[in-house]
Image: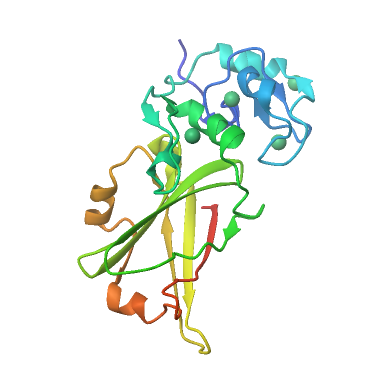
Length: 233
Ligand SMILES: [Zn+2]
Ligand SMILES: [Zn+2]
Ligand SMILES: [Zn+2]
Ligand SMILES: [Zn+2]
């Protein structure tokens, strides 16, 4: 086969929802985003743009998809990330490319607004604690994990999907001191859900603050209010 040209972005031949390679029959939403037939069946609106996903067949996308110029989607078996949160348990396990559909159908709590901003305090903060939160926004699903131990506060936002897409997103974390102008705001790139958290903490590809610093920002009830925003890089 001929080498694919470099003047078009491979992204256009992936489903804009599940990121799997599109196989015919492809459709486009009313904005023009390509959607694979598997996702088109269950989506009521296209999360990327809120347009109707059932707008039109796209034969051009079909033809590009038939060229078969992409590596197959990595087949990784995962547990539902909601099982990582202390309060809820979900027995679901399956392929990485099905997690988004599972979360949007079963656990979507609309924590973030359309622009990726959210504010969920860490509660009962002590020098030994861990937190997990599933967030769906920007047509994607993310997992916020935080861990306090060994006098450090670690925070990472993980993209639920393959590593190669994780660096397309970044997140910011801001804490404000009550009745004061003092604040801390840090930005980092998202990591992939398929990566090991311990490796991320060790390599510092996360937010790391000394616990003494964080404890100055706690409320009287030991909650740590914070503002976060996930956005495209
Ligand atoms: Zn799809
Ligand atoms: Zn769309
Ligand atoms: Zn078309
Ligand atoms: Zn689940």
